[in-house]
Image 1 (cartoon, rainbow, N blue to C red):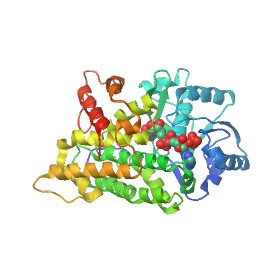
Image 2: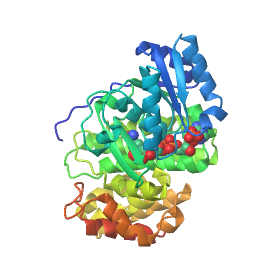
Image 3: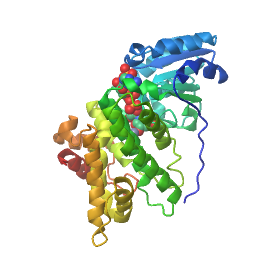
Image 4: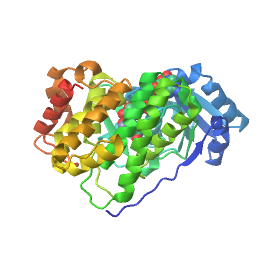
Length: 392
Ligand code: NZQ
Ligand code: ZN
């Protein structure tokens, strides 16, 4: 196991109706003037926004609001949010929504105290200061409620880029599984795919002797394989929603990834797809993750056999382990298909002729992307080609 630090200072508040306590928690973390940031309307329609406002009012907290965050959140709304926060002397941002709303809130949080363009932080500049944020989560997916990351799309050129710092970890995150019961099945499945991808990005490692995090990864994956079909069949299954919601947090606050080299190339390859076509991140991952697996599995066949056997229940073929490794990847793709995810470019709405553009935007040049297997631009092209043509 590698040396590591694990810092996860967020206070998680879990369970039915806990969103009614957001005023209490905002106050606990010093909020006096709050920006409520939310998406394109689901929080308004469900009545959640009104409950959040009431809770803040009951705690004597001033608030203003900014809605309209789109999936794959845009820089343009971030600039608007920064201006609004400055004008209103906002000292705390409350994100009410999913990964897109939380990431947009994080971007505003670093932009407000910074004199320059907030995009600098998405172009490599280290983050030194940020307003505190809190979260009321409405979809189990990105894990941004427990992560120090934020991903924003620059509208000019549709460039999707990320940044990260412990300063971006939420002060508190309220997780009420009942809030996710209004999600359309497709968004539920996109979220489930993202959660599984966050685990796989950590699971496929070159670090040896990491039994504890291997087993934690497998526990989250097994949970997702069991619970996702249950919520697709019955969106109101609170208990299955609850397991998925906590799995989404555990998958990405890095508790399953410490002490081991991680990959993140499937995410990198996917971000170019959601950047170019504005598709849901989870749907893009459903297409890219198995394709990446097919390209790299020979690098460590036994690790793929372990996944196949422990997560997807494949029998080990000792005479030819590659058969088992391939069977595991096949079952993963079949699982994604069974929950309604696309499995190739055509189903996603991507075009094979755009592969050179996707690779160019990745910016690999003559270098290599680090990871479980280092990838050249030619390797990335090959993975996109596998994804384009994939079938069951
Ligand atoms: O905008 P509204 O109307 O709220 O609708 C949203 C949106 O259309 C809807 N939705 C959310 N909660 C709902 C609901 N609809 C009905 N009922 C509810 N309870 O779902 C749609 C998707 O929401 P979004 O926030 O985009 O989903 P997700 O949480 O998957 O976030 C995706 C974004 O997170 C980034 C992705 O790249 C993408 O931009 N990621 C962020 C990460 C991080 N910060 O750590 C890591 C991830 O790997 C990921 O890259
Ligand atoms: Zn993700």
